[in-house]
Length: 122
Ligand SMILES: [Zn+2]
Image (cartoon, rainbow, N blue to C red):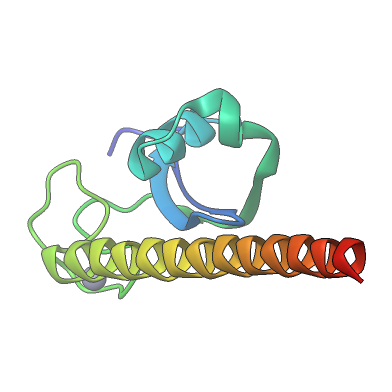
């Protein structure tokens, strides 16, 4: 069996969650993770942390450990799908939080302005 320098990397980024990628080095892994998250590498590179690494095993799912016919894939179709759904859910939640924060900020600004005009009228 040919020895590959590739490993499986579990990379975490606050705001994007965990990406499971295969790569030879941390740098390569961060590039793959950025691609997975669909964001520019330069934007996330500094915030990426290694959660853990695992030796690469062909046709063994990196997440659940089950055997599967995957070729170069590292996750079985079940885990791959689960991860995509999990990420989509996270993005939805973050968007909601950001929206709420913006609304709160607007409300606070409005209250401040009303407070100020009330003072002027008094
Ligand atoms: Zn799996």
